[in-house]
Length: 424
Image (cartoon, rainbow, N blue to C red; front, side):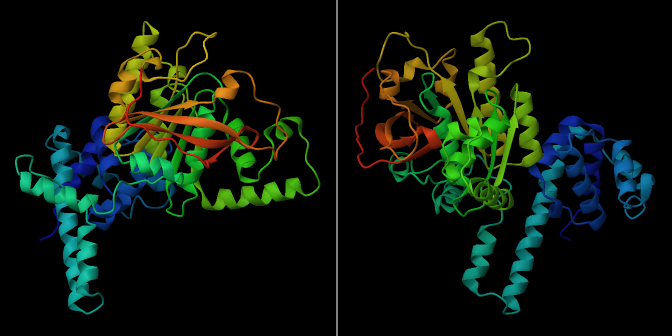
């Protein structure tokens, strides 16, 4: 029998009585992991309540199901009470969910083999489908299994590739569970670089879901930069409200296309708890945090303690949810000093470097020297340097990119510089 109703009951019952069990189940389980149709309905509505930032308990869930005319369909309050009574202890939630996942994967495998037997798919397709079934458990002591699964996952490289090919040359892309820090002195183009990467990931035809969390700008300001990038339309014209004939219609058309096709959420955040809330709600593939030093932290007694705690929390949620997180960070410098940034400039905490898989530092020399001119649009692009100063799996180096600040655009440059050691 490829299911266990008792285990499914214990899993869902635990969600109704224990917040930790709820968070664990929400983050690891899929609706169709549950065999029972009623259990699928219950878990689907639990997910909806969590994404609405509502409590999930024996008050909220029955009311929510009743409003959708689903309460009697799943057996009423009596059955929900039975779920709670079936729980030996919510502390065993990971074991309950593991058993359910194993049964779910077995059903998927058998379904695939049935399609193969019926001639609906060929052997190659069957193997591909089976290989895509997530691995539930790896025996930590079984090196052979670990290596085989590593090869299986690594067949297609890392999860996300850059559109800027020079970044792929150094980094090969970025993977699930990685933190990438983008550092820079004030007004060096960090946010424009981050927005460009976000647009590239979303607009790459792979359906990436991106969450952009801003602690510095309003969502409106971020949205304005995205529209300026996509049109292109000078940011200052947005601020002045200057639109030529046809501009608003073109921008409205772009806004409709973006709104219908991009899986992007832009949210104002004040602390890491806000970020966690939106990650749970939107289940993104990639998260941008703009920026680290501006996030608050309850109880922190110093900037060092605040930033250290926040980067550790971001690392934890990144690994737990297997997402990719880009964190923007300010750098420290003497205001009179004009120089390229270095790894030791990361501000307020050495844990930023420790927690980051990759650190990239943005350097806009003309801006540092105050030599950049007012741009109306159409001028030759500015040049910014992206220095890869930490790369846990590869080499370090630097690339030069074209930058059009008036459009918040960063693109591949004509010239690239490579080197393997950066002098501090």
